[in-house]
Image (cartoon, rainbow, N blue to C red; front, side):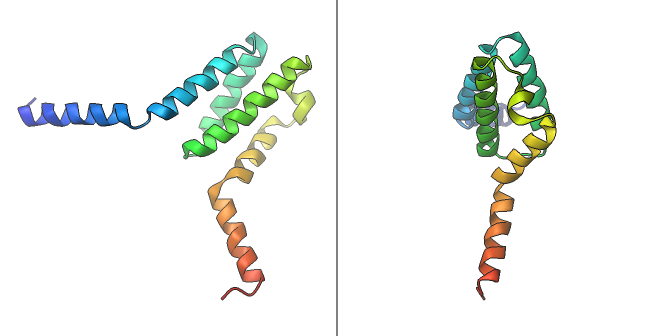
Length: 122
């Protein structure tokens, strides 16, 4: 590796460490909250997390909202000594899909456009 490549690699490492630190901290907090749920609820969390990761959500703000909501639901289920499906219904995937869809920036923009056009915005 040339001197220039080493300098560029060091620069990338510094930037990588600076960018995303807050997101990593928040993600670790979610993981810690999830681990405190106990084994059964933590297993549910891991399955939900896997589903959410593969859903196509790309923005951390959306992930943060969804993970926060999921953890709140799991904590509530634990407090009430119930299964997650007792709180949200049997179709967990549809529930999560709707949560992600309701929170998506794209949907908000589509709704805003439709509302403006419906109200005569031109």
